[in-house]
Structures are given as C-alpha cells and as structure tokens.
Length: 169
Image (cartoon, rainbow, N blue to C red; front, top):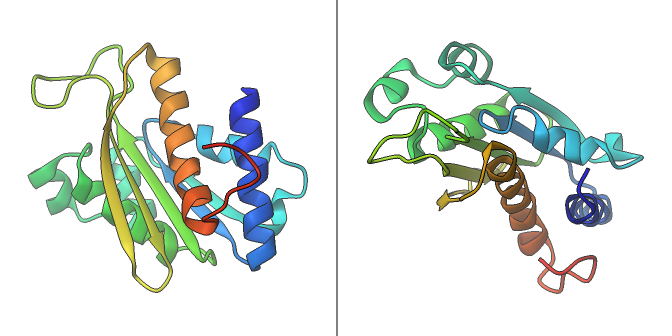
C-alpha cells in the first residue's frame, strides 16, 4: 500500500477511536480499495464496521437498496446513486459514518458527458447529514482508484478534525 494512504488511514482510525465512532463503506469503481486501505491498519476492527463492494447495478440494488429507477434515470455513475449508496451502507451497518464511491476508472467506459476519471464520492452521518461531490481524476486505472480512495478518506479526516495533526491532507 502507498505510504500516503497508510498514514491517512491511520490518522482516520485514531480520530474515530478518539470519538468512539465507526465507519462503513460502499464501493464500486474502487473495488474494495477503500476497505483494504482502512483494514491495513492494525486494530481497525475497533472503528471499521464493514464494507460493500457493489460493482454491478444488481449488487447496488440487492446489497444497498439503491432503487432501480435511480440507476435508470441517473446512471450508476451519478451523485444520486452515490447518495443512495451511502444511505444504504448506513442503513445496513452499525456505523456512525459512511462513505460511498462510484465512477469510471477506465481505461474504457467513459463518454463525452462522463469521461474516464469521473467519480462521485458521498459521505453521510447516521443522523442523515449527507454530502456528495464530483471529482474528475486523471491517470491510468490504478491512479484514478488511488486518487478516489485518497479523497474519500481525506474528507473524513478533514471533517473529524479541524486541526488534523495526524497527516497533512
């Protein structure tokens, strides 16, 4: 694993432990990289509840409760789907915080409207506060997935600690 991602995960883990909170994730384009990055940290079972790899639309529907109409109307790579995914991960876990990622890592699959590197990342708190952003990453498949993982984790570090002294994000 990349040293930067390891440091970011360790920082997030310390912040979650200090607040007695847990996180759960739902992933599409990263294929489990976020969960792998988090569970690389020894003792992560204290703050990482679970992860869902929902690569197919059927998995998003079955495992996270994403409505078929959402996928049909907006597509799998959309803010609406990312927000539905993060709502699903929180309703199907014991976590306090959730994150979800969906996007196009490439090298194929992009379009003029949603080119390779288009990613939607959603974060939510169990009480219903949700946020989603669109990112446009560049590079090869591995780099797009790494950038997505970094952004997904760095958001929680930023939110949970105004003075994130663990790592510069």
